[in-house]
Image (cartoon, rainbow over all chains, first blue to last red; front, side, top):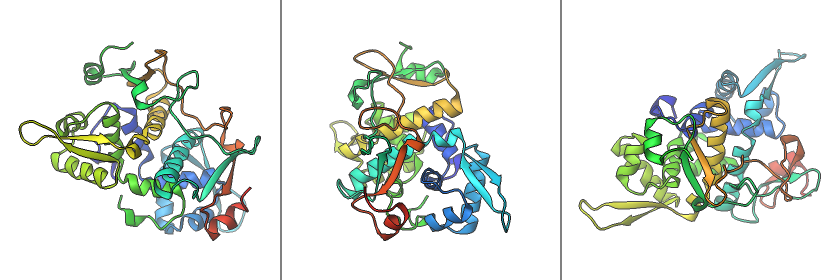
Length: 161
Length: 161
């Protein structure tokens, strides 16, 4: 979807979605998490048209999520790697994967699993949790205006704690 | 973006994105997390056109993320509430919000903060973690085919552990 279909919103969810752009972005980022670096690797793994991939990668570079490096070789090959900003999308991609495993694919039928290299165990389920690590449900969480709240947010969620 | 622009992919990230549909979906879900139930509440908070909202809500109901209930009152008011499938998008929305706070808005300028009602402390940052709770970086995680892997995934990521 086009960015201009979003009204201006203070909320960071809306602003994150604007920057990520289209869903394709997260699939390219997922490929980078899985180790892809070369244009051809992304193309093969995503089965995506060259011109579309090219445009999406350029957008990722422009938004500071990936960086492009020229590498030695025939045909001016270029590597694409994630910046810190891009790497930090890891929890979002894992949360999406786990949601899909649970609600679309079904338990016990995950196509891909993620393991902690050190313990060899599966990673844990992404969950919203308290500072202590205790898992929090929706009802356990209170929304409050932050330091960057505008008038509308303050009116809606009351004064900061 | 239209579903048919995705090639068929086994990965649960792609399948989750197909079901969530457009970005708008997550903003409506965010509103429901914040307590919105009535059509007019979603409309006011999202500043979205009635016909667009109506279409999006119908899609959410169709995909089993929300359910609609007729309530008493003038003009046939209807409530929209999240199903378990929809509620389970909570970690995704929180991860997006925190990413936006960190990388777009900037630390210390978050428009909205989330607090644990019990301790009164801010919730912790969403992170990928081991079964033990230890935070994991991208490099700490190994990708392996799961029980639902197809031939392409097995070839790519090796045999299951």
